[in-house]
Structure formats: C-alpha cells, structure tokens
Amino acid sequence: MRFLPTILLATAISTPALAQDCISTELALVADVSSSMSSGEREIQRAGYASAFRSGEVFDAIQNSYCGAIAVAYIEFGSTPHIIADWFVIQTDEDAEYFAQEIEAAETLKTGPSGTLTGLARAIRFAGESLDANGITADRSVMDVSADGGDNIENGCTNGKHTHNAVQIARDELTTPSAENGWREVVINALPIVGGQNSGTCGMSLTDYMDEFVRGGAGSFLMEANGVSDLPRIVREKLAQEIG
Image (tube, rainbow, N blue to C red; front, side, top):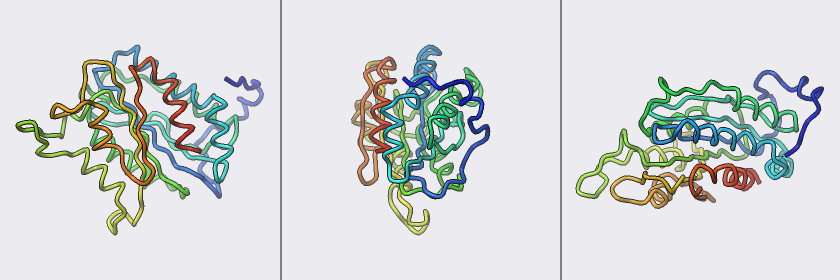
C-alpha cells in the first residue's frame, strides 16, 4: 500500500476528470449488495475495491497500459443498480487515491434503492447504459460483474430449464457488435462469490451460471472468490489483469 502526503491529497481533483486525450480502458465495476450479503460483507467488499486502487499492482497496470490512463465507475446493485463512485479518469497516484476515497465515503444504502433481491440483468443493462453515456472514448470497454447469486427477479426457470434468461439477453446485447449498439463491443468479466448458500438459477452452480450467461466478449474471463473475505485479493488481481 502506498501512503500519499497530505499536500498531495489536498490537491487531488475534486470533480470527475474526463478530459483525457487517450484512455486505455473504460471500466464499469458492478458489485452485488443484495440481502444475501450482510452489512459486514458489504463493507469488506467496498474496502476491497478501495484498497485495490491503492495497491502498487493495480497502479502499475494503469501506468503500463496503452495510454497510461483508465476511466472507472463503481456501481452497486440489489433489486436496483445505482452509481456509488461516478466516472473518473485515473492517471496519477492522486487520482487513484481520490477514487478510493469516493468508494469509501459513499453512503451505505441498507434499504431503498439497493433493495433485497439480485437484479443481475438490470445491473448489466444499467452499467451498459452508463458506459454508453459517459462521454468517454476509450480503447476498450470492460464491465466487471461480481455476484453471490443468480438473478432472482427476471430469470424464469421451468422444469430445470431457463424459459427467459434476461441475464444472457442483456449480456449478448452488449458483447455482440450490431447496428443497434453502434458496432461497439463491451467485454464482460465475471466474479462469482462462492462458498455461501446461494447458487445460479435452474440448479446450476454460481460459477457455471456466471461463466455461461454473464462472461462474454473477446478475451473475457472469470475469476472466483471463495467467500467475501477473499474479495480484496481477487479484486486486486482481477483489476490488474483487466487493465493490463
């Protein structure tokens, strides 16, 4: 972990910095905060994402990327997705520290917009719309989706078969270039949080579910966290791989 002098923190950019000529990757981080996760687990998750941006591993990946700069937003979802830390360009130590503090300082929503269910399809659509509307032109568009269970709002299952797979539909609309999406391809990487009571839908394991229906796009990958306590390590490794 790197510690920055107070004078540097005081001069950190105080509003989202988007006017950057070259951005390697625009990265939407999408994290599950449904009721299957306790308040303590949600705190561990947020702390894990914040600490990742303070790590040398992630910052080295940013510096060594094509442009030496990335744009990132942090989104949480339960029944309804919402932005916790809005789009921000990270190029320097000060930028990374600012974004980490934005994640930590955001209000924790125990009820209300986050809801109680796992609206995975809604979260993917919401993050896709945010990528499209952020005003950023980047070399790559990436979405990082973590969840400790499958979608239990829109997915239908009858006799062990998916009758309506909203997650897969949302994924395919983003990862398949078409005239409707401006021939743009978003890469979606998956992070299943296993080890609890939750699973995918229709009897699938969570890992298989997210690998088949969430992960998509050229070069996409899945990394599995063995419980929420494993998230800080996995998030750090996953971000470094996504950015590098």
